Image (cartoon, rainbow, N blue to C red; front, side, top):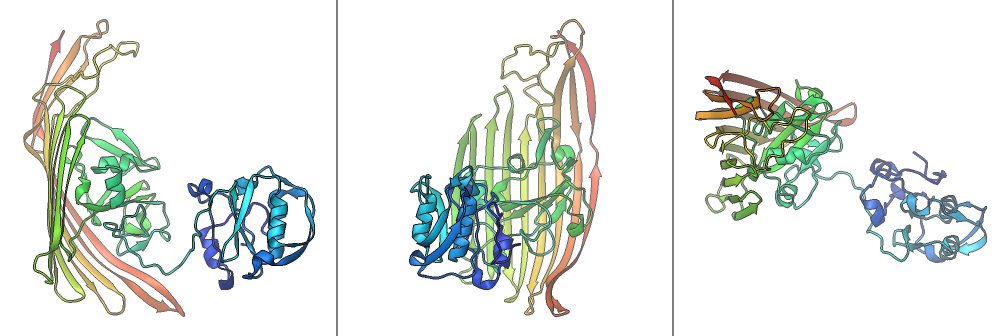
Length: 507
């Protein structure tokens, strides 16, 4: 990092951390043009002065700047004038300056250097010179401040970003987490109509979607399958064919940490960790309803009501209900989803809160166990787009339900203690799996198929997760530190399916 009096060069890169660690009297205001907003990490043209003066516009400066690149001439002039220069380096790319010699005011010098270009400047109250193309406006300064409170909750914040996550024990700063983190906030879920976990991960950078069939989907990141799924920090085994993609109507946010989380979370592979954080009740009473329509005759309704159960009382509750039914472009394909979520909180003391809740997600689906056949040379058979090579009685019906309880206590010294238990049941409905699958039966006739009919039942998974943790500050060797301690225990009991399989030949 350059010192305040050093010449930073024509293409210095400014970062938020650079701005924060400059000497206090030289607090740097980054001013981005519209073209630079989408990529704030683009090189910025920055010149740091030794001091700043309010009468900057009329300050006289004696300079002797030779001809050369415009960016270098501007950097040298503003450095000698004692002002900050901010702008996208692309603005001066390829532009030449004839140089400047003599005594000028700051305004005269800048106007002379920019003469004959399509650039203009503006001097703000904090002595920042902002470059822009033409007479266009520039954005307000972005000021970097430390000490902002960590607030992982996003509902009601109306923001697309979050400064903290709860993927690990306690609350962690996104900036200080040593892996790339994406937080899909409540506003993002609403504005982008991301209705279940599949929608969220399909729209997440760095995550790849791989379909086994219509109902079983695998997600990959950094070359590895994502196996670590958490709900409110409690790990869930996805259970293969009986897992239902969680509905986002009950969520405050989704936190996706890409890369290995073993150093902060225990065991796991180096793919990603997905943490689904559910909504919680507030004291203020609120209620909302939403109806959504879409392609495939989709009809979705949501209801959400929460608040204090007794006015000004210590009890709060929340109930969310969803019914989502849709068809597909294929004949006979359909899905019917039902969601019910309820949570209750009780303030035992001013610093201790007890919470408990229940969530049910049921899904009735026809399913599609395989795609359309192709000709022997790989070309399509010109079958209609709505062709469905299954029976209209196909079904893939299952439900997931979860009961949870937690207790949180906040100490006077800043420490936080949390204990929780979660019990999860994944089930196949009675005779819930009936599927047909077509495969080629001839080497000469591409329309000759084997059809296999499968009827399975009994798939089940029971999971129990216990967690206790404490986090807070402490002093050591004259510095403040943050310590997190905790333990998890998970027990999973599964029961395999049983059923029948047969084959027939169709022509």
